Amino acid sequence: MSSATSVIESVIEPVVFRWHEAEITALSPVTPHVRSVRLRCSLAEAYRAGQHVDVRLTAEDGYQAQRSYSIASAQDGSGTLELMIEALPDGEVSGWFSHLAEIGDRVELRGPIGGSFSWDGPDGGPLLLGGGGSGVVPLLAMLRRRAQGWRQIPAALIYSARTRAEAIAVAELERLAEADPNFSLHLATTREPGGKRIDAPLVAEALARIGAPGKVFLCGSNRFVAAASDLILAEGVAPGLIRTERFGA
Image (cartoon, rainbow, N blue to C red; front, side, top):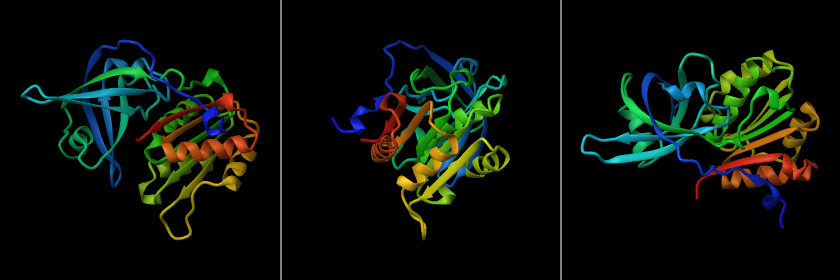
């Protein structure tokens, strides 16, 4: 068995969820291709950082399309939750949110989904987080939750993005790293001059900042998660500590 296959994968629990109506309350750009969507919904007080929801759109003729999106926000008592939706080529749902959605529009949400890929402060740490592209979104929710009362827990985020301009919430993450001595950001840009992919020195640097991790969460493409898992395991981290979510074929 290879090291990558030793990593525990998160799975969707076999639970039947009902759909909840949600209203768009705010829309704002995050990157050139990612839009923040704030939704008022009863699910806003019933999720853990790291979980995701199914989103369903219904056209006037009854045609339906749905897609899963990670929740970017931490519970804050506002009755709303935030999604960060990347516009994908020919994406029915992402295209609607990116180009047509307006404040006041209503959609349906189902969830929350992903119990094993979730974190709350009492779960402890230290936290080692790794995100590739839009895979950083559930990790951002974990860091936002940590900032609400658990900043004493050491945390490090390894984040791989094509360019700085495409790095989701990079300004927020940099502000957090500057203000919080217990958090470090390790950004790798793969398509900029002088950029590189995540490698062993980057992973070693992140681990040096937090010590032995108690929780490891990785989210991104199959390629990113496999590479990050192998590098972390090579540093001696126990496979049973690692939880992953993957997207793509």
